[in-house]
Amino acid sequence: MRSTRHALLWLAFPLAAMVGGVNAAAASPKVVATFSILGDLVAQVGGRDIQLVTLTPAGAEVHEWELTPNNFIALEDADLVFYNGYQLEQWMRQVYATVGNRAPLVPLAEDSEYPTLPIVTGEYTGEPDPHLWMAPRAAAAYVQVIADTLAELHPEAADSFYSRAEKAREALDDLHEEVAEMLANIPDDKRLLITSEAAFVYFADAYDFRHDGVWGTNAETEGSPQQVMRIIDLVNEARPAALFWESTISDRHVRSIANDTGADVAGPLYVDSLSEADGEAANYIALMRHNARVIRDALTEVDETKEQEETQRNEGKKERKAGFRHHSGTGGTRCHAD
Figure 1: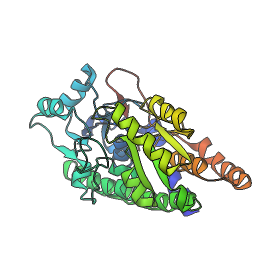
Figure 2: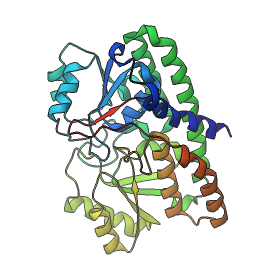
Figure 3: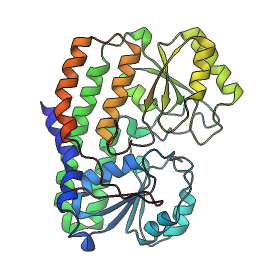
Figure 4: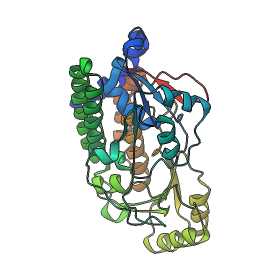
């Protein structure tokens, strides 16, 4: 029951803020996160002690986002900006120019000092893959950087930041074990994860998969004839149980490859963005559970009785689920959490 308890605590933070997190806003530092997954992690630590704005809305492709007028307003008002780093956000030059020296800009992946793995294919092969958060223990390292940074910025709330961070790290440790258990019965000969973007390097390392993708990162050319032919050759040789597509990317390339090879297609998986608040990946924990479930179901035969039992166990969680509080607009998503 430990993982369930921590997961409910994770989900409860945004709900509490919706009830009572606004009154203290005037005295709270203004914090910006570049995309929704970072926004969720920051919200778990910052709670009602910060005002949080996420630049990219749910479902947006983060690599080549174009800043909106509301994004510029949020950056001009920011006391602190969290971004991923390792060249994930190709548009950070605009952020630097807008913020200047007025506020710290903190690259969570780089400052986490979590061991990096190389991009596995494409023109950036060998450079650090930026998708560290796809391993829960890397996300926990992000959480520690967030807590340390917020405590330095707003020392009056330091105890609250560290308390929330401890709970979040416990939840993420439980999540790692839960995902490992979900994937444990996939046979060794089926542990090949082929996706559109090869963004599951850290996930594959954490859970013992081989991994490849049509392209290495969304910052490069996507789905060139050479990329597609390389994966067709790989699929014909390795005969994976399924090909996977991601929520922020069209599935047309993997479906084209599937048509040529006879492979099945599964998805979507979530990598660069959460879903909408009422969706299947409304926060980081839900995202990882969803991905693990889709991968497990595609790569192995699922025991229907166990699947029904899991659905029943999760039904109560879904009823209590609360995501971020979203205010629509071109500037992204404004988030508050308790």
